[in-house]
Amino acid sequence: MKEWLVSLSDSKLDPLSFCRLCYEARDSEFLKAVEQRAKNSSIHEDNTSYEARFARIRHFIGRIGSHLKAARVLVKAGRHYPQLFVGYSIEIATQHLGFTPPSYRGKSSINGIINRMVTDPQACQYYQKELQSQDEKFHLLLEKRIRDEYQNPKFKLRIHAEVILLDLFHRQKLRFWDGIRYIGVSKPACFLCYQYFRAHPLQVQTSGCSNNLYIQWQPPYVQEDLPTLVKEQEDILNTMIRGIRLFVLDKIVPEYQGIKAHPDSTTGLGTSVFADGMEEPYLRDTCRGKLRYHLAVFIA
Image 1 (tube, rainbow, N blue to C red):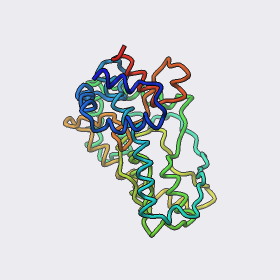
Image 2 (cartoon, rainbow, N blue to C red):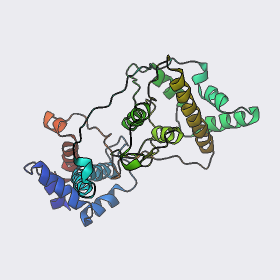
Image 3 (cartoon, helix red, strand yellow):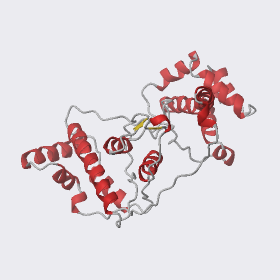
């Protein structure tokens, strides 16, 4: 095991050889041993336990190896659909960030949120009490976390890539290749993007849902002087809200254990872990550098 871990930390390997090494390691007995040592630890957990470090090692091996897989998928697609690679051009699609974060108000409190979600007074009281009970039991500090986010000067709304593409195809009436209404992304859509796709009149498919939630999520910007688009956007958001309301209320029950934080990517991995205090070479080569950073604990 140690010799294998040492081979992964070899800085003399060129990028292609290193990606191939990680790609071929994905089905190895060594990686299975790493997974066993990682147990149920999440890469998002802010701890330095051995389990968490093994989970991050597994994470970065998969991320680095996925580059080789992506290249092979692209070559295979070119063989089956050569017309996609003839006379193509690559353009950057952008969106105007016209929204600013709202200010905190009374309706933004936990009770205020439940009041707006539930019209029946008795049911409203039940959900408020249940949520308060869970907040106290698990020390969630929900009220403080909500206020902190409203007051966070670095809070910035973002429109996710797949939503930008969906909006572009819809507004400019672009044609999907061979009539297949599908927008491919490198990892499953987040919870809100997935709900947006489901509610959108174009009915475009995407690569599944990770169920991860990002509070900085923003829908596409619509100018107020375009009443048709404004009304359409309202309909989409109202449809989303109905689905989200049912989803949230269904989870505020004692039996629900919650969804554990997990990566977005289809390799079972993500890119949201950052190691502090790393030197410049690591910062220039994030995934490889972070892998070596965590490997150093076990091979020192």
